[in-house]
Length: 356
Image (cartoon, rainbow, N blue to C red; front, side, top):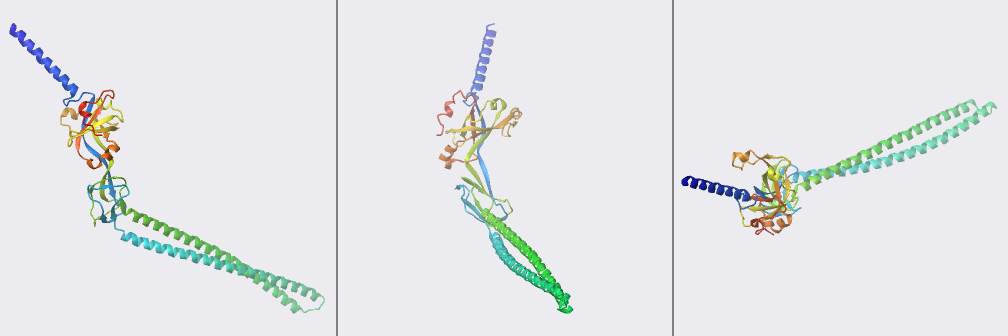
């Protein structure tokens, strides 16, 4: 009986110890952290930017190397522009020819207007001649009634009137022809001016292509790697360099539904990198996915693979990045921590080594 009581007591002790160990594990999650702290593995990432050629062509030179820090607007590479320069010269020649065409058309308009003025003067002259011939004919017709002139004279005067009318009609037709010629010449001006505009547009386009052949950094950052080398021929949109924006550095990690539901945007976060475990990097929760997904392949157990996880992004403050810009390295693995209870303090392990 004593042995049975002793065995029962030992069993109770074992259960109590196991229960205490389980409670301790749940409380500190096996890594010394309270259960209000959620964590996930990830890597330091940054926004990547491809520096690409807008138009196809040959890479003339690359002015930066991998790892170089660059500033916004800095020239990174130069595409060959020989063909573009030739096209620009051709377009400029076309514009000069079109401008000459405009001047020629304007001169032609002036010439046609002068011809019209002469035709109008001729009309005035022919009208005066017709008036004189008509008056003479009327006088002759009165005289013939009194037999003081010959019928031949009257016939001659009538012929002169008819001739004057024909001359007037011809002069008026010349005025109409001059008007048509002026309209045609003015249309030539419009066409020539349109040709100038077309040539100017081509020059502007080629100039823009030449400007685009100088590849510049769109923002401050660091060159990550070269994609092409000088002398290579690229298609339109071909990548030359890849750079990272070191003003937007973050770590993406995954948390289960139960934990991610307690996270608010802009919540404080902490990042500890494997390379420098003695330093804790402050961060902010800048993104929480609104669609769940399966856990990443790095999760080992089948049970965990069946859980739906949400992607969370912890972004490092820009001021801190600028302060330690030469120490920022993307791709480094580490752990991100989030405090699920804003009222609860951070553990000492994540505050005493906080980078400032």
